[in-house]
Image (cartoon, rainbow over all chains, first blue to last red; front, side, top):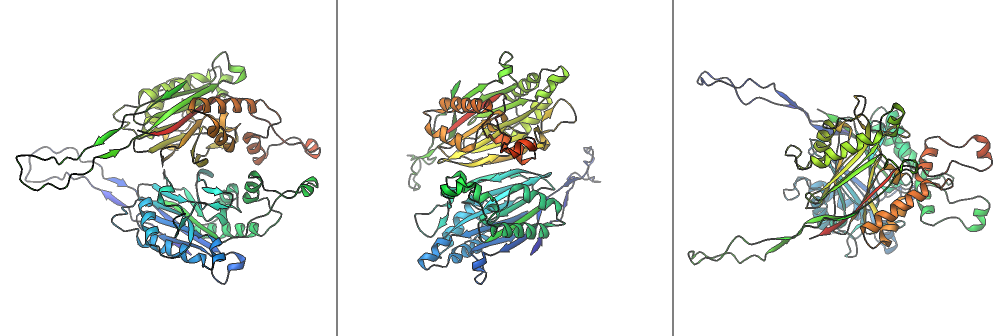
Length: 291
Length: 291
């Protein structure tokens, strides 16, 4: 699925016009200024966990063309399945509510307020990590993040911005929940970044960032012909790595940093904890256009 | 050196007051609202490169109590010494100009405009990486960054935000310069993050972040009694690591990721490129207070 969310440019014309009725000296006519606006061209790709192909997985996402573009991903916490709850219900309803509330007057293009209202409107049992990014036409990208979905900004071939996962402990991320014990919009990381024409943003669930390094993402983006191809190729690499028990993935590195590893006798034999992490994989790539 | 930049709180009182002249029914008196303001308690520590102790090194920094607090670090590019130019002159003048221009009307608390004007006002020959962070009393931290100085935000024991270095190639960062070939405020990474009471920010030159891992910073901050102790202990650890040829530093990891390593015959013997990076080390720690 590839969206093109381009907006038309407009001219800010000089308000002072010559008039036969006026003999006052006019200021020299200003040169009409081109007011450029930024928006996203968006490509998306989703690959469900290999064991959840039939049910469509538990990630949910949306893309909206409102303003410069609004993008959201929620990742349903799979632990709910052990309690007989379908983990996809909460994430899907949360994303549907978020998308529906973008134009809400009270939200007023504030992503934290959007998350607050979307969470309050979600009645399903469950919980989810979530990230929402809203682009204003002046280039300000507002980001709200709870948990371990993520976002990277690539400018001139390097990652100039990245979110950091929030977690209670390894593999237990912050999450919006139907239960009081969960996090709320108060716990969100809230920031904004000035984007420039030509920047590319990559948003994903942890299924992406646990399995693909930033330098791989940068290479794929620079080698792809458009955002749709970028999103598909990044998701494919994530999927391949996630099933490769020998790949020294970001997830394996993080696990070892947190003290998890193979048993001592295997370490003595030179082995270490490796492998990707099978998971739902959602990738959204947004390329910043000027119009 | 430790600064305490606390501001007094103020009350927003109810504008509707009872008056004998008015018989109109007053709305119930609102409870006076406490409008809290955020500011930094700041600790700083600087350790020069071991070979630059006599000249005081080439980093420069400032701390201002304007608004919620303004912090800046510039790192003079040492390559200028080969051309007979003292690399400290540019970074020191740039920081002095930045500090002087904080209250400038045209700057209007916009860090990118501040950097633009401070750069334009700097007449020394040389170049420097630079980072400036400005806290508004409502908790919005505005950050402008050119090159490989850095900033981390720690909330509840985890890094929730980090800047990323910008570089042309390994060890050649983006830099503001006296020469036209250098970068300008246009090339800066510009972002803002909502801070909360209790957050801690750590700013540093690359001498810090090349030698100390984030998890070490988090541990030191949680173990220190105040920001002054945090800054000193973090700088001391950076200095120790920078001189340890066996320490597998962030700098060594990055070098190996970029393809630099020991010769093949040493690799066969199980060796790898390790060691810290001797450098000027500037550390600024800001703890967010509510008053």
